[in-house]
Each structure stands twice: as structure tokens, then as C-alpha cells.
Image 1 (cartoon, rainbow, N blue to C red):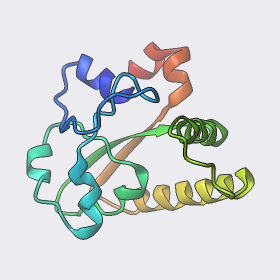
Image 2 (cartoon, one colour; image 1 turned 90 degrees about the vertical axis):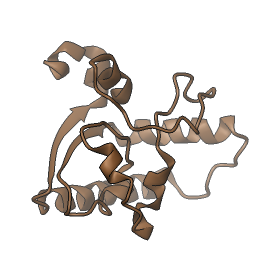
Image 3 (cartoon, one colour; image 1 turned 45 degrees about the horizontal axis):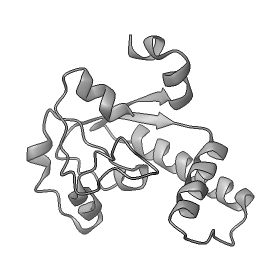
Image 4 (cartoon, rainbow, N blue to C red; image 1 turned 120 degrees about the vertical axis):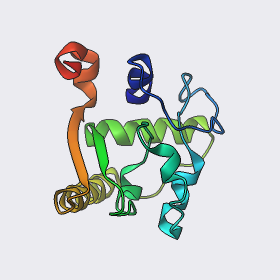
Length: 145
């Protein structure tokens, strides 16, 4: 959703369009597969990303090098909604749900978020703002302006 908004606003996006739209995300994913190689130190593509938006999941943010400056739009969504969305996607793909309880998963996700915020706050090369996922639907003008 956010990448689509940025595109509509005139921002260029670094994407490879390898992951195509499907029933879980009919408008597409806007991903760039090489992002997944950040943990292995593959950052040569970052020069192609300068001045562009790129989608990076929170788990991979900690691999962004301090040799570049980053502005992060951090999408915030209710943990229960994230879990419901993930469970629906797994069902759609005929993948059996994990035996992990939602309580454990919520605790894990909250711990992860705390770690990511600590990491971002401790990095001078990372500037971020939180964007409330639900408010983007309820009152997008309040978020965008």
C-alpha cells in the first residue's frame, strides 16, 4: 500500500517485479529480491536505490550499512491483524498453520519490534517515521499531509 502511494506521488521505486500479484495481494508486492541478501553482505545494489523507495521487511533493516543514509517509513499495524493476515495467507497457500500459539507469536513480534526500534534509535544513518496502517485507510490525508 505505501509503495503504491509513493509511486502515485511521483517517487521512483526499486523493484524487480519477480513476485507477481496473487490472491493474497492482487495489487502486487513491489519487492526487490536482492534485499533478501542483505544478511550475506550484498549491498552493491544500494547505489541503484539512491533517491528511490524500496520495500524492506523489518527483520532486514539491521543489515543496512552505515555507509549510506536511510529514511524509513515504518508501517505500524496491530499485532493481531498481522497474525490474522499471515494465517489467512498460509491457508490460501494450503500451508498448515504453525503449532505456535498466537500468544507466543504476539510476544515474539512485540519483542522484535522493540529490538528494531532500539536499533533504529541507536543509528545516526537511519531516520524513521511511524505510519499507522489503519489510519491510512481511515484518514489518509492526515497521514500524507
